[in-house]
Length: 78
Image (cartoon, rainbow, N blue to C red; front, side, top):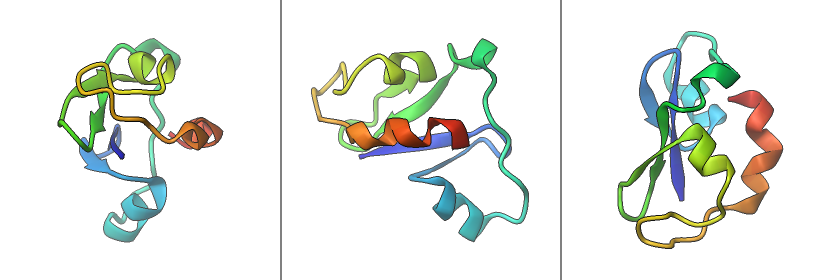
């Protein structure tokens, strides 16, 4: 239900696999100092969240759509 803005290309993709299928470069991870940047897009209402905001909630603060709680298992990839 979300898309992630990848630091390396500034494009939104639903996951790292989709990114890798469409891009020829390696993924660059956001540093902890950059977690204030808006890099998460709600797929329901198009609200942008900062990485930190996304990590602190399970629902979109704008439309209350539920995010996939299992995404936290992939934080290390982004």
